[in-house]
Structure formats: structure tokens, C-alpha cells
Image (cartoon, rainbow, N blue to C red; front, side, top):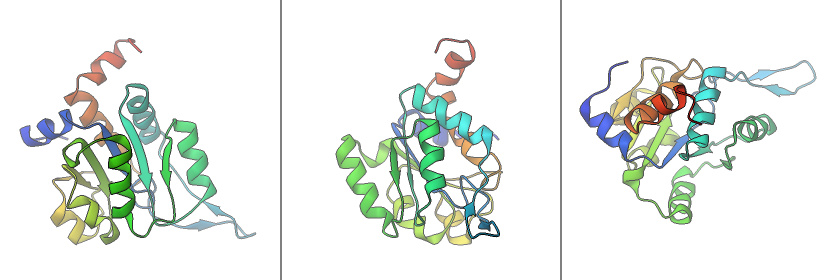
Length: 176
């Protein structure tokens, strides 16, 4: 995907990337086993991008309206320490996170897909929508991705930030 100079300029300043989960890190489907257990499918490329960001010192968080042990385990495996589940008021969590990290809206990217994500998207510098996001989210987003949630969209955001900050080349050269 080609990014504008505006997207690259915003990505250069990012210190925190926040992802919604269902519909962004997953395809948004709810899957249940016969015994009622919930399962989710995560994209391994998204996971690699997130883990690289974490290793390179970019903070990563998830704020999701649903709660799931699966999400907690997946984020732990990627090194994500900021996991907020069951948060229908995502903006309150966002504001508290900014204060705790001593960062500004200009230093935050948020990736969302549904109207519950709009309040954060209206505040942060780099608001991103996945390709299959709700129409109001697409209208609000500074950047609309080519990929749908759970299909590598999160990786595209990670790559944009790493490229803009010169971290991607450094990682591919083996300078971990």
C-alpha cells in the first residue's frame, strides 16, 4: 500500500499503537466450540508486526469491548503489556493510558473498525480503519487500509510505523 506524506509524517511521531481486537486483530467472527468455548483466529503476520514494534520500543496496547482469556494469552505471547478488555468506554481508557505514559494525542495511532472506536479516532493523530470497517469509521479515519481485519491489516500499520521511523530496515538487517 502506498502512503501519503501526511501518513508518513504522522507515523514518524508515534510512540503508542492501540488496536481494537474483534474486527481488527481478528476477522470479527465469533466462533464457539460444541462445549461453548470461544475461539478466535489471529493472523501470524499481524503478530509478527506487533512483536517487532514492541522489541523496537514502540508501545502497543489493545482496548476491546469484549473480554476473552484468548486475547490476554495472545497479547502476552506478543509482549503486549497494555491489555484492556471489557471497555465499552474506550475513550476513558485511552485518556488514562496517555496520562500514564506521558504522551500526547499526536504520538498515538489507533486502529479500529466499528462505531465504538470513533471517540478515540477523533482524538489520536493517526486514526486507521480496516477495509471492512463500518462506514462511519472509514469516514473518520486518516488512513483506510486495503486489508480487512484479521487479514494482515495490523501488520500494514506496524510496517508503516517501522518504515517511517527507520526501524524496519534496522530489523531486517538483523540489528535487533
